[in-house]
Length: 81
Image 1 (cartoon, helix red, strand yellow):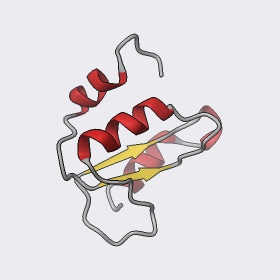
Image 2: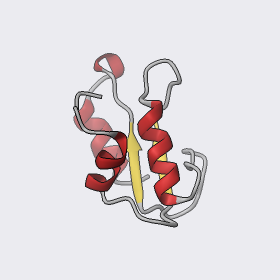
Image 3: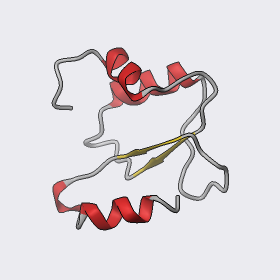
């Protein structure tokens, strides 16, 4: 993460609230911020949903890497998650 903020402060800025359903896309244990993930699940009180889920979600956490392709294409695709 490129921020000096604590994970809890970042989650507050994202507007995550209790009982929200959050879809996580692109997670990789090797390079994703585990502190942010933990802070999000603590704040929401729910586990992340995967792309296989058919639930309507309140938020999407999209982990993106430079070599993942075209970010704009993925953001357009994210409208249908």
